[in-house]
Image (tube, rainbow, N blue to C red; front, top):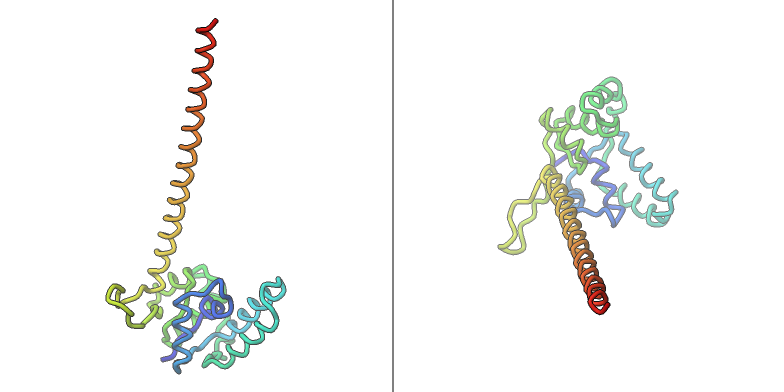
Length: 206
């Protein structure tokens, strides 16, 4: 199977803090013999991400070199025709769907060659729905135990999962804050009551 590969997937193979099961499943596909095709812009974008990380000191030169070698060993080929499609096709798609030209180049390539797209970019996923481009779902492995579902969520579903996770985190934060606030006012009220009791006792003695 051949598919269009987005850097929102490929760059996660380099940085451990951004590792994602979907990205790992796409890497498994390539290592199993499937082929990815990318627009020429993909090469510049990948280089820009790595160079920025190296310049910031978050990616060591040896690790960057190893990753580049591994990336070049995978079955990923650049679509040379994509260069001639920048004007007007890629530019038009970028304006229509409010995408960057980098993202629009992946959409143009998938449309022109009728290929599915592997991406974790929310905007690119939404933009692919209008022209009917299919998104590779994640993952396609069998469950290890009966308690796990056989089908796995698509990238579209992952958007909702991330939103739900953020909502749950905010709710938990609110609960912790309310508990702290309750403890504070309970302590303050108890202290005020004790202070008032001492004042009343002094008044009676006088």
